[in-house]
Structure formats: C-alpha cells, structure tokens
Image (cartoon, rainbow, N blue to C red):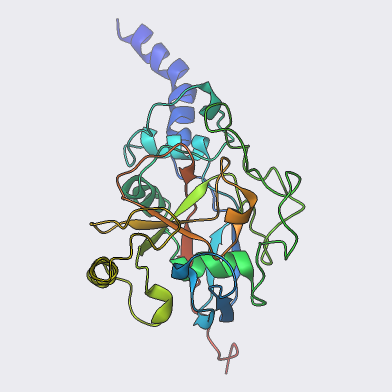
Length: 282
C-alpha cells in the first residue's frame, strides 16, 4: 500500500510547490525618492489642515511604484499573515486592481509581511509632488480621465487595474498617486500637523489639536467632515469616486483605522539603505 501513496505525493509535489510560491511575498517594485527638500502643504487652495505651505527635508527612501494589488494581498492572506478584505461584489475582484476594503491595520500587516511599512504622510507627499511643489503628480494641469481614475459613481464604478495611466507618473516614476484609491499612510490625523512640521506625529498631539478645535467651536477642518473624537489615520491621493479637485497631492482626508472602504487601499515604503561615503579601498 505504500507505493500508491508515494506516487500520489510525487504527483502532488509540483502543485504544492506552486501553492507555496503563491503564498510568498511578491518581488519588490519600488521607485527611489532621493534625499533632500521638498514643498509640503498649500496656502491658496484646499482646506485649513493643508496650511501653511512649508519646506521639509527627508532622507532617501523607496515607495511602491503602484498600489498593492488584490492578487498580491491575497498572497499574504494565503501565507496566514493577513486577514481577508471586506467582502465585495464583482466590481472589485480583478486581481490586477488595487486591493480595497482593507483597514489601516490590515495595510500595516501586509507591509510588514513584505519587509516594509506604510509611508509617512511627508514621504507620500514628496513622492507625489517632487521637489518643485507641483499640485498634481504630473504638474499643474487639471485632471482628466486620461491622466487618472476618478469621478465615477460610487454605486456602479470601481478602481482600474494599477498602472492604467503610465503616461502620467510622479516625478520619481510612481503611478496612481492621484485617483484610483485613497491610500492609507502611517500618520495619525492631526489638523495642525503642518503648523509644526518637525514635531513627531502622535495620537496624543492629534487629539490635543482636535480638542482645541472643539473648544473654539470649529465644526470641521477638512470640508464638511465632522471632527473625530478618536485617533484617526490619514489617507492621501483621491479615489475613483472623487472629484478632480480632490486629487491635489496636498489634500488630506482621515478615517478611523478600522474602516474598510471600497475606495481605499495602500502602498508600502522602505527606508533607503545607508550609502557609505568612503570610496572602496580607502
């Protein structure tokens, strides 16, 4: 009886190997953002939480070229390192689409699985704007459907496969940083963050800022959204159901980190390895 069992294992071997391979992290596809200064925020348009326009300096880092796809996220689920996205209809099941219906916690878990992390708010904005303070990743031209995925009806629309607009990258070659899906970033939502840009973003600081706005009876600080009473997280970039003006690279929105929205996904980032200034053999 042993010979048939052994034969079955031999025949199943390639299939099991393929399944294991589908549960391994995908190879990284990232763009490098060099160290240096960039312009963050906006003074003449947008919401009060985007002000003031100021200069930040960041070390070098790398960020995913595209949003994390459903296919890649499902590898993490098969590996037992991620939990399932929110169940959604057929509009959101294309493996090439960005994964949606995932919380900030789920996005964080995926990035850890691939040896990365969520980008900070400053890293995300520099990747989108470059060093010249442009309004959109491609420059100053108002978005069209040739440039980005946006403006679709929430009940019938959906995100496009990642990289569907290759002719309109960010200055460093990242795609889909405007439209398609809102992207979770690491930072807590602090409406005063740009007033003290070098302060470490923490929930304690964010909650103090929100309490100050409530004390002054300011009902909202990002358009009509109510002020949160808990530590929420920032999303950037605009989504497939959003208007063109909201695709500004300085635009900030916020939601509770447990929310799993049909218009929100994410991409990951890594700190660039330090490069020795010494020449070889010196």
